[in-house]
Structures are given as structure tokens and as C-alpha cells.
Length: 306
Image (cartoon, rainbow, N blue to C red):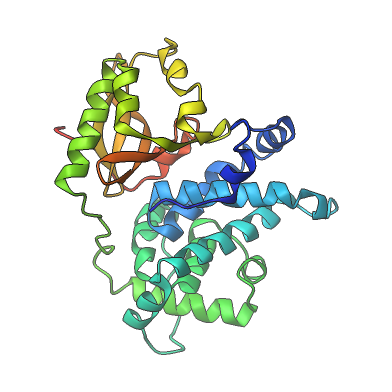
């Protein structure tokens, strides 16, 4: 699911990020993998998580003038990211369905906090929890925030956070595995993605353009947001930075185009490209090549035929 953003509309004139925006992104570069990890686990998708994080970071950038410099930047960013995640879940109508499916007693006895060595298992299982419980378990058991910090981030009280933690942890002990959230991609869309991969690997840029609508949108993190036709996109892939090829695959169950690095270890997934399809045309391209943390945070990355 792609997010329609205010970011593109504000950059349509050139598609390029302004210098002040790039400077802000550089300032928070060390925080972005952690912010993304939280978004990925809240949304249930490394790709949706990156889109949500990008929007949250852009919102933070627009609000910089109102930020109190005497306070720490990290909690402020996390609060914006958390609110964006909740908005995302509400739009998908996941919150109501999850809460209805996971109704339980209001108060339960706390259980042992999962060990740090199984953080990844916790991250997968929390997808079964309602948003507040999901956020509290992630922030406490994976990100190691204090109860006071969590209460501030999720706009609750310490008592409310404790109750959400108790309910969430108790439910996790009864879940054998995370819910299967794989999306179903039509045969027509898969064939279009395969054709995109074949032409990209041949560097047949005219052929790739033929697959896209005239007003297809392109978004590359920290770089470009605008019309594909107005971008220097294909020129960038002509530069021999690393040997690469593309393949059809999936990230967290969603069909995507994977960029494979061809090195001494063989073909290794390096990044992903998400294509939005309408009818028989590509109407949107989101390239995550500048977001190295996306595949690292994914629960599953599968190359077709591997």
C-alpha cells in the first residue's frame, strides 16, 4: 500500500530536495534505521514502514521552526513517527479489526519480558496486537524505553502503559506465530513486473518508459520526488558503481523488484523497488536504494526462483 503524500506536491517544480532539507536528513541519519525499524514493525511491512518514516521525517522538517532546541530531538521524532503509524493503521482500518479480534481481560498479571535474543520474534508476533499494545511492547521490550518515556510517546499514563504491556505480553505467550499478511498479486501485474525487470536488466530505458504512464510518479528517498519523466533516474543506474542486476521477488510478502548486488558472494539482495500498477501501466515507482536499512529490517526477503 503506497502513501499519497504532501511531499511530492511540494517538490513537483523540480523534484529535487532543497539543501536545507538534505542538511536536516544528514543531521538525523543516525536515527533513521531505528525509526524505520519501529515503523516497519508497527505497520507490518518494511516497505510501508519506510514510506511512513519518510512522511514523518518530512513532517518533522516542516515543523523545525517550532522545535524547542533545549529538548532532545530523538523523543520528538519518535512521537511524530508513532502518530504517523497510528494514522496509517487507522486508514487501513486495521485498528478496529485487531482490537475486536484480540479482546481480552482489561488487567492480567505481567509475564516475563522476552529476552533480548528473541527481539526479532517479538517484532513478528506484535502484529497480532492492537496498536497501543503493539507500540508499548515494541517500545519497552525491543527499544528499551522507560515507562515514563513510553507514556509521553503514546500520549498515555504510566498506569495505562503498564496495563497495555501486561495485556500485550500475555497475548504474545498464546500466539504460535504472526498472522500471514502476504498480499496477493494478480498474474497480469506479475507479468508487468517481470517485463520491467527484463528491460531494466537490458538497460532498455525506452522500453521501461513504455511500461509507465505519462504522469507516472517517482520517489527516491533523500533525492527526488516528482514525475518519472522529469527525473535523471535511468542515468543513475548507468553509472558503474557496483555490478548489479534486478529480479522479481518479495519483501515481507509483497511482490517487488529486487536489486541484486553481484559480487564475490554471488547475487545478494541489496535494495528494493516498489511499483504501483493501474490497469496495464506502472503509475508509480518508489526506489529504496538510498535506504539501506529497509531490507535489514524486513522479516522476509525472497528472490523469485531462488
